[in-house]
Amino acid sequence: MNSKTRLEALSKFLKSKRANLQPQLVGLPTGTRRRTPGLRREEVAQLAGVSTTWYTWLEQGRDIKVSSSVLDSIASALQLNNDERKYLYDLALEVNTNVYKHEVLQTKLSPSLEKILTELKYCPTLITDRHFQIVGWNPAAAYVFLDFEQIPIEQRNLIRLVFTRKELRALAVNWEHFVKGFLSIFRVYYGQNMGDEWYTQFLEEMSNLNPDFQTLWQENQVNMAPEVLIEFRHSKAGKMIFNLTSLQVHGNTDFWCSIYTPVEGSSTEEKLKRRMNQSEKS
Image (cartoon, rainbow, N blue to C red; front, side):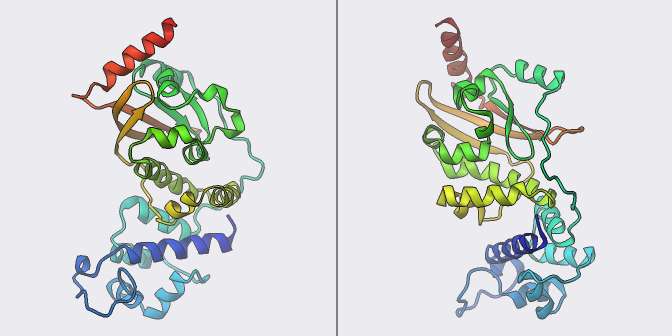
């Protein structure tokens, strides 16, 4: 990500977070003459203890020098969560500048990850890399989502699939809720890998491919491990309810593990067992 792209991302992120923060939440009067949603720039500057001019330059994406302490104040004024705060630092301080040109990401899973996929027999599980390329899945994931084996390797990108495959859009009862969790994780990787031009190219491609992507991406949600309750309407199994748990795989890889656990008290696990057993016998 070049400096211009990084500063544009910083500008959009700050504007989005300012627009989403209501005055009453920070002890400011709502007023009757607000023409834009959320806080004004001068209000953020006041809360952060910085000059309005300086904050305006920061939000405009100007290439100015910032310190961690000032960013702490900005983050507190905008009530950012820990993941959003780190994302702000990644963009403003440009702490990740490694270049990844033509790098081939590791796709081979360790025996321990293979074992995890096997043991989570009735918990649909996906393993992705930092580009959200799907590098591993179990039979439960193939049954609930797609037969990933039938999808060309270069097209096995989770973000691309949820925005382009009609069967995945029809699967989730609340499709936007479903994809926002993935986008919030994807944005974490986006902020962490400033030198990887792949992200710039991919975001441009997805924005041109699907207008819904651009709309949801502009919400600037950042969450390293969102806990999502998701309801599916499977074409064969019917109603299925899962808790999505996201885990980062520590080590020499940038793998991410997404585990869909059947909600206790629902019939999801029983349906999955029955349907998968029937598929194995047929």
